[in-house]
Picture 1: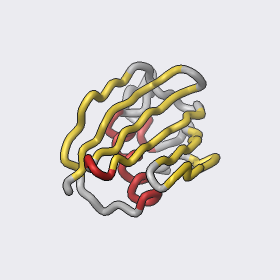
Picture 2 (picture 1 turned 120 degrees about the vertical axis):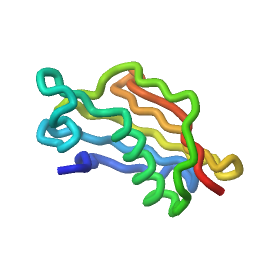
Picture 3 (picture 1 turned 180 degrees about the vertical axis):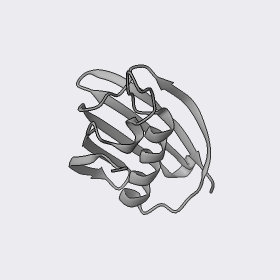
Picture 4 (picture 1 turned 180 degrees about the horizontal axis):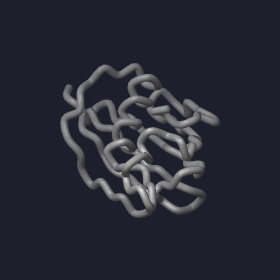
Length: 114
């Protein structure tokens, strides 16, 4: 399996989306990243933001770059995470945050081509 289990999805507005995801231990991305202590790769987190934003906001823009990306806490097999994605249409930018309760695991801004 390549995508996490979506436990809930809320479209807060036409520019804000919140998802609750369960990260099953058999998720493809955990294999080999690191065999003795698997964690969800940062590139996968970025890719998921792009996928969910495309579906949630009807975007077909291509990736242009990233700013202020921080990976502060590893995401581990079996965890449930909350992802908030905000679409700043005028700036062609996605702002995202993965969190576990009050703890921010990762966050950043993704620039998209106009």
